[in-house]
Length: 318
Image 1: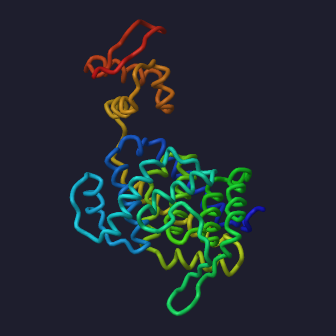
Image 2 (image 1 turned 180 degrees about the vertical axis):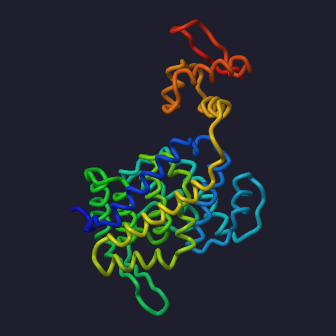
């Protein structure tokens, strides 16, 4: 059964704006040319997602943990960070359309933090805000088929992944399938769904904006609960992604030079390649530009040229 939502004018406009900004980012090779930016944004994503759940560790402390340095802080907070780092390091191994990967990710994320990580809850649960019951989750007995239906939607729906990722995020939060870790799993899985289609989302810390706007995040969830469909939450999440792309574009580090292109290409760990391979990687450059790049790299002894004309291949010099 397809989860209920309405595609309205704001959603269409946001998808158009997001697509345009992603095209600008990809054409400028911003993601590929800045490994330091990628690392920093991954750390910001982890810090923001955990901060939403009450984790107290700072970006500097999380950086230190990644670098295997000693950090002083609550044991629970440190464990949450080490678990999150492990999950995000395994993102490319996870399959976003399968419950098996979903449960495996939860097990890694919550290992040592709850009694049964990687398993759906067996008891009822309600979310309390202040003195009021904000959300009563479906009975535990309903979770298996509700989650099965949700993953079936991911598999068969022809909706754009921007829509599907938001719908999954909201519906999973509504079902609340775990005793703990639901929020971070919803945000993680939306990231996973997006990055499988668009790799730049691995390094887009839109969770930082959610952390800064938690009231609006929870209000969008609550409003969608009241209306019985995820439309308002979709608008909120797409707006958050759109603003995150604006911030990423502001971090651009200038035009890509031929030295940048060579270093970016060699960083892929290619063992041997042709000019055609190089052109396929940098789709916006001309054949003449590719030849100049490769000739310069040969002169600087970054690569070795073997053969001539159409039979030419290149290998990196270590």
